[in-house]
Image (tube, rainbow, N blue to C red):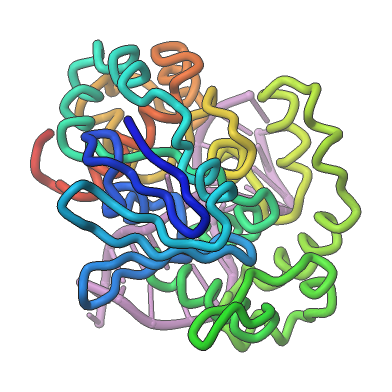
Length: 281
DNA sequence: TCCCAGGCAAGGC
DNA sequence: GCCTTGCATGGG
């Protein structure tokens, strides 16, 4: 995939490995929107970009091109990844369904908070709650958007704050989580294995096996995980086997199959399954 | 209306 | 270890 950086934009030339729709709507990020003219606006931390399609491909317009070059994982060769996991019949079909998916490199704390909110929740409501947090606590980026708040700022919020945003029973987790994140040194995980990181993440309030995998995949650049939720249970039973019962055993099944690229395989399968619903791959 | 949503925590075995 | 239950809320 070819792209050119300049001062205020990244030009990504037409490629099967880059589709803003696939990247943003595949469920890995909650702070984005599609404008009426087809442009996408995407937010991470205090960073904002507008993605505009043109005849040659896409322009990522932003005043922080280095951030978004890494954010969109532009230096990774997705063709090689697709070749590695596409030997599986169903992953191959899923890739054909959404070839432009890329795994974003998003902020650790933002992902932790976002995916704690995601538990047993609808994507639309997840977005509404996160938007509320940013609108009420985040610094203003411009006329229409707010940054994700700092952890220090989030530590000022009490139970009522999250309840009035309709976070439901997750409110109590979010109050504790902010303080746990403030007291945590993310670099203490740099030298640890992914499975060791997962054990540590699951000590955080509201973080279980699935949310920990999402934090590792979307917020820590660890691709050797496989988040299993209700959708991936469906995928396992529909396309693979019926023997395993627990989500953790399904996770191990898929990680054994896809290894270091398990997270990529999961995201293609997840988005394809959610798009097709009852139809077959 | 009723079922479900990118599950987690706590308790029982 | 694995399995069950309660949980807030609102979308479809």
